[in-house]
Length: 426
Image (cartoon, rainbow, N blue to C red):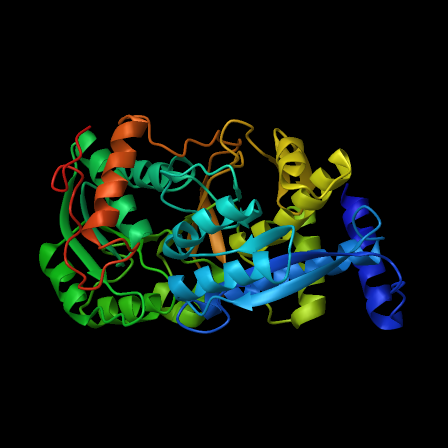
């Protein structure tokens, strides 16, 4: 399969240089829905590049079912309402057969009902909080048991017991904080500080003072987008450094580290399913091909890889079932395996999530992560943590949605209510 991947790279370059695609062939449209502007743009734009790279390679090798794949790119502008509007346009005006997109869970949860009504699949490339299983979403990022849970257990194995939780003020960090609280308390630990700031206007100076005063053993970082730079600057200004109080981040990959500045984050940790520094030949082949398109400074991350492989999963499923029709492609995806640059990925038929390897990396001064822990095997996805019933988790989520007035984000940065406080019980 590695040879097949390189054949795609070579043919893509040839097609780009020679313009040899037969324009008379039929066209099938797919959507790319990510933030190209706003505080999430630095994270999401590289994922768009990964998706486009896969589409170009497919076209250079003959397309899918004899069709040239035409990507339609829409900007979600880091706003759930804009994501909803652009998702509707992709389905109704552009007539796409599938969409690759979203980063924040606020944007994803806002558009999921639109994809369900429209009968189109969304391929989602980012780790998230769980508590979701839509028939119209293929989840290529980690579920809680494939990222959050093993990362906290690893910190606890290092003797950490007192934790500060910091996040952006929307559904992923808030729900993840419930998972973290349950897990930490079950193992005799304590959350000594919680700080949340709006995604659009993050200012963590006061929050960093609260964290420093609480004297945690470690910080669990659920901040997304540009807020990470504000967070790490504020922590360093308060004397909170990685050698004394390490931070474990769940949404900081290589592009975010570059935006923060490696000097501010060196020695801290991140949990993903892959890192750019992975020495596997397939991964390094992909990094070289990506940089051949976007320059030697281009950065690959776990979500970039997932966005790229999402297109390959869709194309392989369509070829297997001989159709672009949503129900047929969904059935073909069940238990489908694909050998891509990230290794072998398998779609779990029960959940439409991927089996995932888990890796924890320590940030280095050169902007890469050094792996310090590796699950060494793929972990079966569990979208709903097993220590509460699915009904209880769903009720907690519904109550939180109502608490926010029917939105998937807050606005004041106050401590998130626990499931018990909003009416749900285990």
